[in-house]
Image (tube, rainbow, N blue to C red):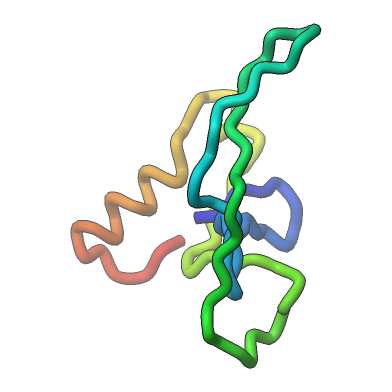
Length: 93
């Protein structure tokens, strides 16, 4: 799925075509803010090649466009598209 108000919608997947950082992820608490976060300590690389955009992640199969009205009304356009696809609803708009 994708989210954008501009003319070229695109939201790429979290991760990458060639691999990702994950594995063991200990919780770390920052001393001043007390903010806790997970820090991945391993990197995985996949045995693939030839991806047209090696510095990017995987683009969505179904980009979703939002209008300002969608945002103001709380319309969940991604869910609407997902349900349409799940129900075998043909062309996605």
